[in-house]
Structure formats: structure tokens, C-alpha cells
Image (tube, rainbow over all chains, first blue to last red; front, side):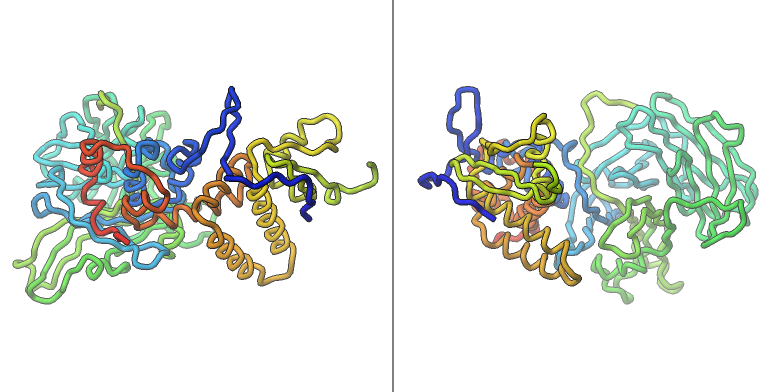
Length: 342
Length: 166
């Protein structure tokens, strides 16, 4: 296959770049072309990407150019001051599961309402804000009209740095009515929308997501209510029941899977180091999320909505239980352009 | 030369050192930069195509990789295992200097599959390793000032714990 032509005398092989003056120039690892570096970095998980940036100045890739092809799943445990546990679930490579202890003052006394695209929507002492725990980026929201958020679930339509991001907060106002508060980026005020909806249609809201241009609200009993926020359609709300498989013409396809009880399914108690038993009783209030499919994790291979849930200890231990909170999150390293406001 | 099918046509490539390589046009298609050059030429390309950024050692390796992968793909079943074994050997056989040279050549020639494989190989080296290890392995000098490095670490201090020092 290889033809032997004129052979050069093989001296020290220097990579030659055709510069304007035809100079010899050695290309070192530290000055690989930028696009090559970005592509190599995209094969790295977030933690390794952070190390990568610290190697040398040329390897300080702007976070916007980090587009990982693999997907990760993390879980953040918080609620006891600012000290949090941050768990990276293991991927294909063995021993890649890691539990980090992190100090996040932003989470001290806060409650997470939504998690999406690496951002958390949090409420802390009456103030609402977006927070990315990986980059510590923070975006404050205008006044939050909510006092009690125990029964509320929220979702947002896009990355909060996007011009047209919309936030909705939903709760069941009564046995027959759902109440939705909506905030568009750029507006300073929340708007309220109500929907007559009995419990048999949608029980306690335990999941919220944005998919196919609509907000989607789910309960744990296969109920689904969608809300179209663009204000153009005459009918904003629609009720559905999620079925495995339908033959009638009234069936539409759901673009994501719904996952319940993920905390138990993935054996998170053990992963987080809970000993169990009488001296380690916990009650965990967990915020769900919408995630992009993760190839290596069979149960979450497709785009999925993980429902919010509360882990309660046995009746006899309830009074002693530590009250902590958790949230599922997929990592992104987002930086907010200076001066960005809502 | 009419009457000869595309897959039999041979393309001649010339490296920096002047070595000539005869390549089947079906293999040359995977060298997207070369293919674009051929597509852009009005006449049939008969004279050797010069590759000013590619050395003999790299082109030889790239063609070896492509020939083997073509062979694996067109053969009988069970080629996946053989291909994986070949890939592992291929990656191991190179020093990191040779790996770097090969990535640059594959990037210049735009050999998509090989480039993905090589990028993954580099990422595998970096995975779970400390910043110091990566610097030593790739022979990179730290050009951050102590203050700059401190600032970077502090931004995500928690992330730098629990990483292998090996």
C-alpha cells in the first residue's frame, strides 16, 4: 500500500506551520488550536473540565465552548445551614462516583422550587433567584409574591440568561382549582392564571417541566395538565392522562418519560452515606427536574421528568428526624454576562 | 482513464518529507480535506497532492488506521471486538508527543472518526487526574501567576478535592 518515494533524512520532527514568512514553529500541547482544545474538553466531565482550565492559560476555555456530549446526573443535599453534600453519580468508568462537601451560603435557609439546565430556582427569605451551583452564577428575580411555598412546584422555559425565559409557579389552591403565577423576563410583575381542575384530573402537583412549547404539570398518578404561556391560543390549559399506549385518535405522544421514586430506585440513601437506623433518621424533601437522556443510566436513557418526592421516616421516628432537602441536577458551567438583569 | 470505477482509483499524496503514498480513493474520502481538494479540482487529479502540514510518520499511521477500520467494517461479524483491540493497541503504541502530532495531522486532514477517537484518548488521560499530573504528562508549563491560580481554584475549590494525585 505504501509506495516508497524519495525519503527525507529523518531529523528531529518539527511540526511545520505555513506562516506568512514560512518560519518553523513548534506546536506544543499548550498551544493546540482553540477549536481542537474545545473538542477535547467536550469529552470531559464537568469536574475534569474545571481541572483542564487550570492547567495553563491557553487551556482556559470559555465555558460557552464546553459542550459535553456525555451527560451526568448529580444530586445536591442541603438544608442544614450552608454546608451541603454534592453527589456526582458514577458513570461508565468505575469508581467515578464522588461525594463532595461544599459550602453554599446561597442555599442557607433556601428552598429549591425547580431545577433545569444546570440552574436552580430558589427562594430564600422572601427573595427569589436563579443559582448555578457549578459556577456559582446567580440571577436575582424581582419581588416574589409568595409567602408559603410548601405546596408549590415551579418550572422555567429556558436558560435564565435567555431573553424570553418564563417562570411559572403552580399550586393547588383548593380541591377544585389550580393556581399559576407567571413571570416573563423583563416584566417586573407576576401574572396569575387559574384553572378549574379537580383532584381526579390532577392531584398534588409533583412535577413541572417545559416541553413542546408548553408548561407541563404532573402528579404521581399519571395526571398531566399543560399550560400554553404564549397567550396566542384561545385555550391555554389542557388536561391529559398519561397512558402507556393508546389506540384512539385522541392520543398524543409524550416527548419524555416520567420517573417516580428515583431516590429509592437509585438507592440514594446509601450513596449519600445515610446509615439508616434510629440514630440517623432523615426526612428529605426532594425537588424533581427535567433531564436530558443519559446514555449510561438505563432507567434515565430517555429525556425524563423526575418527580418531586418527600422521603418520610417511619411514624415513630418522625419527631426526631432531621429535615433536609435535596434536588436533582445536571451540570452546566454557566457564566452570566455582567449587567444581566431580569 | 475511463472505465475504472471510483473505488479502484488511486490518489497519490506527498508528505512534507516528500514521501509518496498511493491511496485508494475510497480511503481518501475519509481524508475530508483531501477530498475537498479533489472535488474542487476541475481535471482529474493525477499529480501527487502535496500535504504541507503532514509528515510521513503521521500519514502512515492515519492510513494504517483507516485501512484497518475499512477492513473491520466490511468484513464478517465479530469485527467490533477486533476493532476495539486494534484501537487500544493503536492508542498505546504512541508516546504523547506522537499522539499530539497525530491529532494535529488528523485535524488538518479532517479525519472525523480518528479525530474523535484521539480526542477521547486524550480525555481519558486527563480524567480524574490532578492538574499537576496533566501538566507533567503533557510537558506543559504553568503560566498562571500564583494569584491567578489561587483565584481559579477558589472559584471551584470543592471540585479539586478527591482527585487522584497519581
